[in-house]
View 1 (cartoon, rainbow, N blue to C red):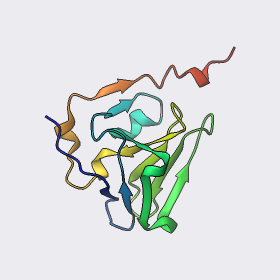
View 2 (cartoon, rainbow, N blue to C red):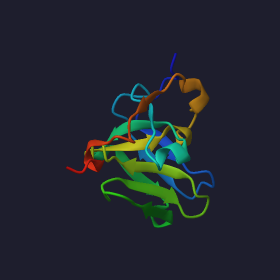
View 3 (cartoon, rainbow, N blue to C red):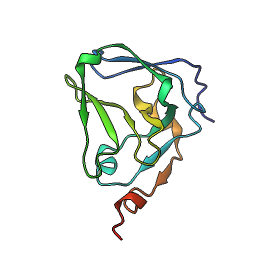
Length: 128
């Protein structure tokens, strides 16, 4: 059974320099992992939030952006501790993926089983 998540919910990086208020699309029910070259190295479980579902409470200046490949996805990390907090998705640029491990009171271990998305064979990577 998934832990109950109330919205908005508090998300922080490891060092506490970044704090974000998150309203999730469907609580922890959207949990998933991706096997693209970046996500499989990062290893985080992500849950969904609408684009208007994230409000940076503190530390906006401490977030750094990483993009690669198609430059569609935008991945944000804390400059100080390096923790991935959230990203604007390539699979759906109209939503964010939020690092479930950064949500206050959530242990990703309690989320198993977690579905996998096929990022290796993403349609935008096909050349044709």
